[in-house]
Structures are given as structure tokens and as C-alpha cells.
Length: 532
Image (cartoon, rainbow, N blue to C red):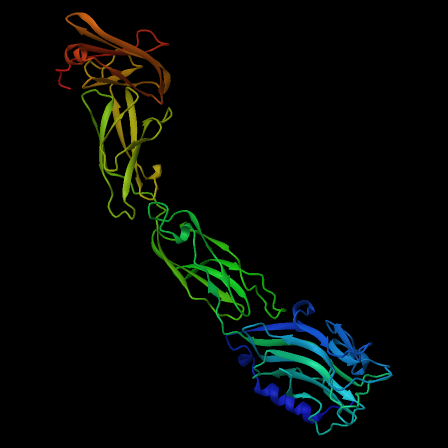
């Protein structure tokens, strides 16, 4: 077949004038089909005809990818996405009928260009009754038809099948909502367009196409919510792994992703399922999505969070910004921890310390724990204390003990690894008086407060103890009580109610002994006028 040299020259000029940079000028995106698309898919061009005749005068072909060989001939005319006249019909197509493949731009977008492999032509059509062409909004794109050729005669063609020298056309500067590669019967009224008998009279084949679309509209974000976007559930601070929920919508290319960043550094990205073989590659709405942030990846202190949605064309939403304060660290160790016996030979100690300076979250409490200095037995459960102390701590009995104190802050962070420690020693033999005992197993201290007698017992890590008291006045017993309890982690506290006469005048003796030992007791003798 003869090729129209003038038409080819026009197309070469179009290719030279268009550049990849202009075709991809932001904000824009590209949609590919057939040989130009991954796996040679076509999800963007659809075929249609307005010919009411049955059978149709037009034939639809979809052969992607194009694998047929040879130059020219029926096989090439019917390759890729193509439209031809139907062969062997007794009558031709009526004026005004048409058929072809159409690409429609999504709402909010505009087609600005196309790069495609095509083979457009007609033969034995000296009156130009057939009009095969690429049209934008129904208007023939200059150079993309045979009708403008000076060699228009019995045969004319633009482009050619892959591998036959037909150049790929790149067209820019369009502003269309629709492209169509179609054949139209433009014979005069009362006439008809002749169809082929053994060879097609007209054809319009496209083997691969990449359409460029402009999308000027940015996506929108919903109002974010969730712990990460709140005021801080840990006393006004953020810690651990927190999340934010958000949704995005877009008119045009669709939402491609939502990015959560901290101080400008991306931390997590939601990526939408996108397919650039569709005119709208990405979904118009993401629905509600949850993005999580391990705040341990941030330093303790103040940070700026941002959420940004992007569409397939690269447009970005307005930034959603939020300020947070992160506190994942426990307070530092107490400063100057010291332990002072409450009285000589006592197994109770007053702990004092100062809190470290420069803490981000305020220190709100302290915890302490008693362990054997030699580490030969289990430690007590942690006990609570005021943030700045002091606190009175009882150790289980004679011997060496290690007392640890660590701090907790407003964010709820506390770590025994940040403890300060001090060692104390309780003599194994005591001479009596407050806190003294006759055995090595159980020790008691008591407090007389108005009409309450509070007895503190320390001893082995476990065991059942009988605790009692006797009140004597002028040699007569005026009050007595007792109870059996179990030591828990070496400690026990028992409270007795006293009558006013006993509390005011009686000499009170307190005793405690292990029920599985004999002659193992501790006794205190106290009168309300004593030095306590």
C-alpha cells in the first residue's frame, strides 16, 4: 500500500514539537492500554457504533497484545484495538454511521495528550466517503487521518503495524474530555460507503496507547481522630504505639496515598490500590483508614505530626497538623537516697531522697522494694511512697538488706532499672525496747494512736503468726485481744481497738510468735506516757 508522505511528515513534526516533559507536566497522570500497558491490558478504551443495521457494517477487534506478524493485510488491520468495515456485505454503510474505540476522561480531568501506535487507512475510496481518524471531542486531530493528504486517491494510510516502520505518534496540547479512534461514513445523503469484498475498505487500528490527563483538583482529608491526634491519654503525654484514623476523597484521578509524618519524616503510609490502565486509576474515596505510630521511634519531647493525602496526578491535600509531647522514659534515679533507723536497733528505717532535675513529665510517685543484701531470698513486693518522700520502710528482720527506690512520672513511666539503692543492717541481738524481740524469727513494732493500737510484724517471707496484746492496770488485766494471721512477703499489720481506760492508763504488752515455732516471741511494753 502507498503511504501518505505528507501525513507522515506532519506526524513527525508533531512528535518533534512534543516532549516527554510537557506530556508529564504536573499535575497530570498517564493511562496505558494494550502494547503500552503492563500485561497488555485494556481497561480504558471502549468500542461502540451507532449503526442500526443488522448485521453491522462495522467489525470490532480486540487483540492485545498485538502479536500478528507481517506488513499490511487483514491481520494487521485487525490487530490491537481496531475497527474495520465488515467484508462481503451486499450493501454499504449509510451516511452518518460510525464505529470506533473511545477513551473518556473522568470528571474533573482533561485529556492533554496521547502517545500511540496506529494504523489508519482506506482504499478504493476516491471520493473520501470513509473517514478513519483520531478525533478529540469529535474533531479530527490534525494529521491523524488520510483525508488531508495530497496523495489521497484509491489508497491512503497513516502509521503502520509494529515493526513495519510506522512511527509512534506523540500528540500534545489537547484539551479534550474524549478521544476516539473511529471510522465514519461521510458519504452524501442518499449514497453509501462501500464495504470491502475480500479486503477491508477502511480500518483504524491502535496497537498501544498512553493517554495523558491533567487533574487540577487536590484531594480532601476528613477530620483526623484517635489517641495519636488527641491531647495525650497518659497524663497529657503520648507513649507507646498510638493511632489516628482518617479518610480522603478525590475527584478525578483518585486518592493514591495518605502519609503520616512526624517533624517532616514519613512514619507510615496508607497506599490505595491503583491501576493505571483505568481512566481513574485510584479510588475516589479511601474510606476510614487507621495509621499507627510507635512513639518510641521519636525522642521524648515535642513533635509536629502531619497528614497529607495525594492523588494519582501528584496533587496533595491541605496538611492536617497536630502538636504532641512524647514521654516514653522513666524518671532518673532519686538523688542522695539515705536510710535512717527509726530508733536504735530498729528494723524500720526512714528513707529520704531528692528528685532529679530536668524531667520532662512531672514526678508523681515513688516505689520501693526490700531485698536481701546477699540476694539469697526473694524480694518484697514494691510499695508506694510520696513522690518526694520520706517513707518509713520495715525490713524483715536481722541481717543485711538492700532497699531500692525508683520514681514514677505523670505519663505512668517507672522502671526499677532507674532505682537508687542503699544498704541497711539490723543487729541479730537486741536488748529490748521499741522493736526488740527475744527470738530471731519474728519482730514487732507498735504505735499507740489515741484509741488504736497498730502492730507491725516483720519476719520470714511466709508463715502464720499469732499476734496479741494485754493491758494491765494496777496489776490487773483490763483488756486483751489476739488474732492469727499470715505474713505476706515478710510483713503484717494488725490493728486493735482500745477502750478509753486502757488507752489512757494501762500498761500494754504486745507479743507475736510463729505458730510452728516454740519460744520464738517478741514483746514490747509501752505506756501512753512513754517517749513514743
